Image (cartoon, rainbow, N blue to C red; front, side):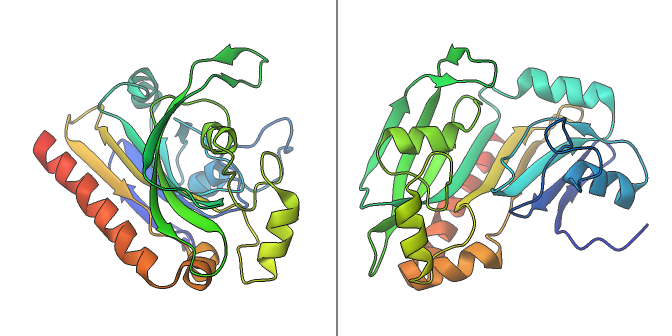
Length: 242
């Protein structure tokens, strides 16, 4: 098996999970062309077996991506993907000072042009020390196209580095202050029930350096403890389920 430069988060006979870096596609599509590198292509090369997609993650985002190793497991996961046992948590650096927690219940238009109900919970974790930014935790309860990015824009706190739904002028200025040069969105936690064994899985993707270093600059070192506490709280939830 060839050496793998990407962090492998989980592997068993049915599932595999990687930490996808920012800038890498999950799957090739008609928009990207068949020759562009993708996580699915990488997985096939590393594992030497077919892989089956379960969900998507924006090209610019980093974080947990789960792939199935057989079609039956993929179907079982997709059937249960939006049910209560499956929980999807993100970290995002947003423009402005956001405090407390709130639920965003706001429809999102899909790639097919249809508006569908979408619901997210947003909670402030750590404010900026010099710039008007906030690190937030977001749990999505539905899986709509660009849901986190659109819901944060709806709150008027767009994700830093978001060229489609954000504030490009603010993004450019923040880069000059040591801010991120990528989309500041990271899928840091995925919990689910294994579709074959029935066990509770908790998959955690550490924040990569191309986002962690700018967060150190903008938030100070305290953000790491806030995120660690967030993970500990999610771990406790999984333990109670078991």
